[in-house]
Image 1: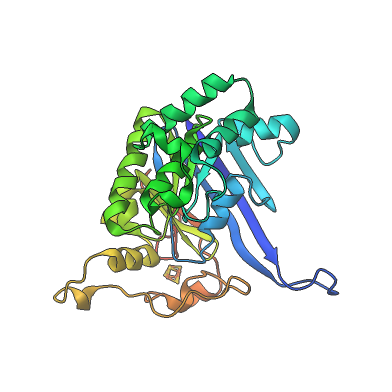
Image 2: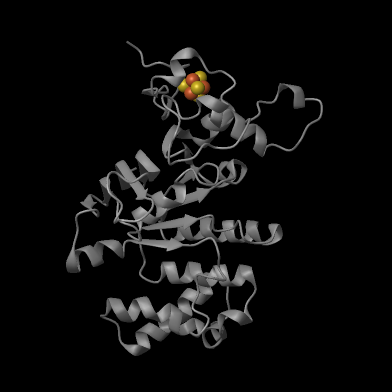
Length: 324
Ligand code: SF4
């Protein structure tokens, strides 16, 4: 499968305090050298605890925040350096679905206007064609055509997320970035939205970058996954391999915390102790070492190198050193 999105050594730090302050300002190291590839037609999961930097990666990919360093390439064309008309054309290839369907839709715009807006800005379609495209989009996401005349407050959370998905689809992008698209919804509605996204992926030959804190959701929905911890990717691979045989202690702990509680097996489960440290002053060496049940003296001093796992992704952990 061809790559749709290639992210290489992406970095994004957010300086803290006043810009007038003398000397170097402390910074939140939200994304600290992240690389991954999303292939044509796949759903690629980016998973980790809140604050690990996954949403910042998503925002850099769609151009909502500028990257400090690194490259983002969409269908072979670099997004990070594209400017002007070409930049706008390239950015249309990547659309986003946000976590909160209540906040992501303009309450003052009728749904039809919201869906027509990107088509009007892109140009090239008559009013009749835009009306027809809007009606088609509503049907595709399972809403009646008369939804176009209504306003967001007239819909449930699940229906609003369907509208947000329709808006993301309007320009027929090859890639959609979905940032926790079901975590604000009732459990009963979550499965419906995931099924809809998966059906659209197939029918539109879409690729999805799926951001989630929930490894269980990622397991059922994605083909490959990258696990993020404190601004870095610590493990990556096909979901079956990562879930069945996690190499990184953090992935193992995430997996165990996503399984239903089993009092008999409880003693054997790995636990994540403590809170994730601050991204302003992350621990040296392996960022995970203060919480890792398998840490060794080297872990506090040296950041682990990336080791490929039998052609199925890779892991960054001193328990799995690169072959010499
Ligand atoms: Fe644990 Fe060391 Fe591996 Fe980090 S490098 S996950 S501290 S064993």
